[in-house]
Image (cartoon, rainbow over all chains, first blue to last red; front, side, top):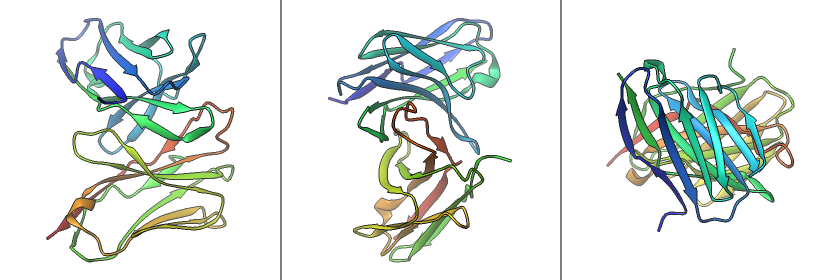
Length: 113
Length: 114
């Protein structure tokens, strides 16, 4: 079984809809991250969480919110989706002692019409 | 100007070729340098990790860091079709207690033809 899982893997939604992307991990890591990947722009950090009680904004947090429901679960919400949020979204985890190694999930492809 | 610049390619080489992938950066505070590999429809995975300047070798892969020039490279010797992927450089000023925030380059798409 995969250590970092994301659901759904693909999603098509309409402008203005609220959607949630979910991430679960079995690695026992405290640190979790949400990134988006766009062609030509690489990976950009949306939010990150040190632990359940510590959530921080990343480079591009506007239009997004997150919830850390448990050590193993970190969800990303788009409150009112817009077309320029069409992207590939990745969840990642890391261990406190090996932060250079981030373990990524398989990604969620989101299309906002 | 982006903090990390990486030629997006695509780069196509024949099997057996030596591949050179490069990134430049502007933040002199960067101390940790990583290369991630991303296969199609997969998440990135760490390939190599280097602290400060110097070289690091792992099998067919060599990572180089030149902090004086703010330039890092990844060399792949005897490239194989299985090396076909997108390679992303990533950097951070100080990893520990900084939340592991990495700054990624745009990624270079590599194709190795049999």
